Image (tube, rainbow, N blue to C red; front, side):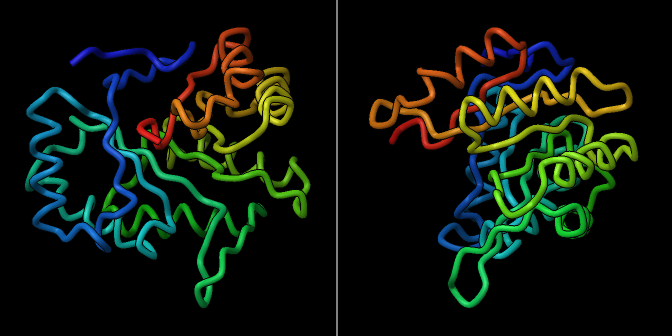
Length: 210
């Protein structure tokens, strides 16, 4: 499988990633292991999850495969924070406190001391941007996340975050944005993808089959 560098960062991932949103919920542990085995044997190395996938079960399944199906150093594990489900309702909270707590819980479920990529999953108008970005700085400088990024941000929101983080010393550079992109939804072609090309961060599509 073709490998690609993520934007201008040093992170190298396979061209096709394996999404794990249904793992631990609609996809049981045995089926998840079969999917991961087939994917890795095909040359893939990028497992994408989020803290709220299956109320954390997706990360638990991945953690159970580390050391049994693959070595930790052979895979790139990505997870996200900022969204939770409470009593069936979607809640967003990208405050520094919430994001930091979410990452430590993700690491515990994954059974690892770091993730390779950690992304803020949504823009939260209730929280000052500086507060959210400070959590990325914390994760990056403490080694909990090798690279950091954002997800589901608009073009101007993305450019604002990327330039803010790159123009100040001691800040964690934004390595990626993850957005919906398929033949059914090509909105990111207007601003987000041109911004990634101009500013040098990687673009990761979700639900590429629509």
